[in-house]
Amino acid sequence: MTNFLRDTISGPAGLAKLAFRVFVGFGLVMVVGGIALTLSDPGGIALIAFGLVFIGAGYLARRVFTPPEGMKAVAVKEDAFTARRHDGLHSAQTQSAVIHVPEDASPEEIEAAKRKWASEQFEQRPDWTEGRVLAESERRGGLHRLAAIVWTVFALGALAAALFWGDIAWLVLIGASVIAGGLSFLAIRDMARARKFGRSLFLMEETPARLGQPLKGNVQTSMPSGRPPKGGFRLTLSCIRRWEESTGDHSSSPTTTRFRSETVWRTTADSRPAVGENGRLAAPVRIDIPDDLPATTLSQRNEGVFWELEIAADAKGADYGARFVLPVLAPDDAAGR
Image (tube, rainbow, N blue to C red; front, side):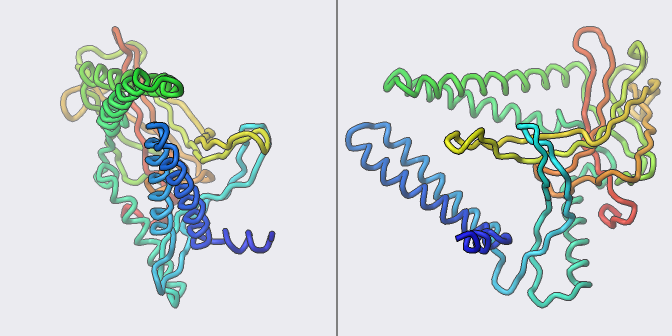
């Protein structure tokens, strides 16, 4: 049995088959159970909907992770590390992206495919390629507003369901309201800062930045040059690793998945305000980067290594602040050239 499980889940193709069977099987059970429940309780419609979602997830997993015919999966940019789990114990983790190459590809062809993949991932961020990095509040501000609207509509639907059916629908309403409220707060905060401080850009002197070399450039703000913040700007450069962890206290507890993070390295610096290219205030940046740290994970996912530059300054009313996710690569990495 142990050998069967190991063979089943080994490699992306095995994991895809396992995910397909588990999700589709569970989805079918939910759909059948929902149909039976609908005969006596309208709440069975929700169970059918969840079952269809699981079935769709199973087909998506098989399509995404199963290598096409005549191709094989190859891992790129593996990052092995030891993570401190939620229970205080340590576990070995490996993060990597997977590409597909012909089964008879030579080592040189595989390396070329890896370089092409890295360049394509880098180019998915036009602000990286141009060296004019957008603040995350501007990149994701629209997502906050959209998510707030979607969850508000969902909360209103949960309210109608609670008034009609009651029972567990009230719990769904409470959860949806909390999420909608949090997302609305983030959206309002982003809009208030954007209205007060305008657009923030990090103009990189060289893109991408390289491990072992200084990060140089200017943070271009829209703050008036005649009103510099007292104490100047405060800069924080961080290397952060994020990963996904499944948690459960014991066998009878439900398993939940959460994103965890750790700061691999961090440094701070002060920056004296200067006049930027648009006549507004700018913060010159020059921070040395050690050469023994992991590079930015290029795949556009929520897991991996992220290099973040944060800038803050005291201001009347809401304080100024912006955060930028930067490309910091190894000196021999061809991506971005």
